[in-house]
Figure 1 (cartoon, each protein chain N blue to C red):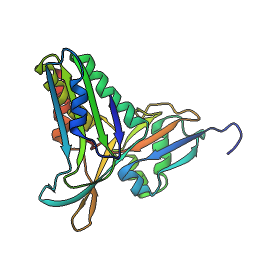
Figure 2 (figure 1 turned 90 degrees about the horizontal axis):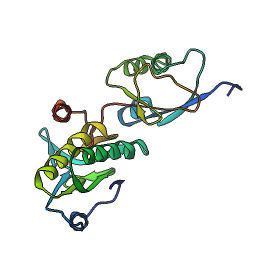
Figure 3 (figure 1 turned 60 degrees about the vertical axis):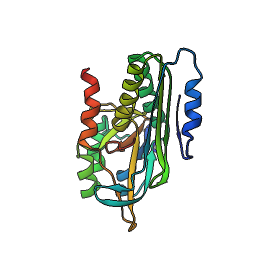
Length: 89
Length: 150
């Protein structure tokens, strides 16, 4: 981790955890990531599966355990979660 | 009161706690079970995944909203996570109030809100061992939306 460069933690749940084959990861908040929309775009650059799911309107997000829209501004230390619509009950 | 747990719950025990308050004239409970059949498929089990921390917060928000909308004495919501076999209990909702109208309405509101707002995901495994993640039903979204306009 470069000094002065913040990290965010990303969590993936259920279908997305399996599709991306990971529960969580840390990502650097580079200059190209200011908002949740930027994060989706950057993660989408990883490949077809990533871009399809990151641009899918059924892929929802929470920032620090609050539902968040694409315009949400990300800050160092944030916990970002990606998941599809819930199915409990 | 609400909790997320792997262990089973005892409906009679939870009901007994709901009775223990003066001026309770009505108790409504709902228990959800793992169906043995879903869309014609024989179901072996469900695996419930949750987001520790946010699941509890979203469940508390549902309880808080129910308490702000109706005059309730007690609310008890229990949701299980982990692997649950067909026929097992998944969710319990118990509501007590002075009168039945509030208890019926609040109980239905809680299960409808829970299905669309609380961080829980179901993976269903059939008797042949094939698993799939269930998707949110439009019917559940409509039922929850109904509460926003009333």
